[in-house]
Length: 177
Image (tube, rainbow, N blue to C red):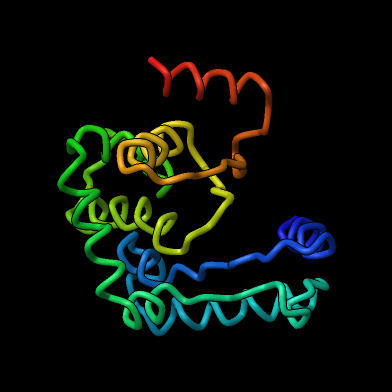
């Protein structure tokens, strides 16, 4: 499905950034938190997308590794993360934990909380115009932060959420109240 959607977007001139979230996988205990294993899996995913026909070589797809991008521009990234952590209550951040495949009542580590603040920051750091949301609460949190800080975002829902007029209406009602 990812290959089909990326190819549709690039065929009409859209630029697509694919964020290989290796540091996020480590914070979320994937592959026992071993970064080498996580990066190997990420490399395999790129090869799978190519084999499935994703037009990566056309110039409109940019594959970014979170660890490399963050380390190459830490002076841009970490102030955004710090601002998000400072401006949000812990309860708001915890409500977004479903994007990690976790529940609010799970025992969350500091790494999980850090992950969530970083996830919010990615949207602004990467300067994307479409936000692929995997949870209603995460979308709301990102939009609230964006509006409070005069940042513009557009939204496309994905993952376990379907795009619907009802979702857009709910989102706008929540943001305007």
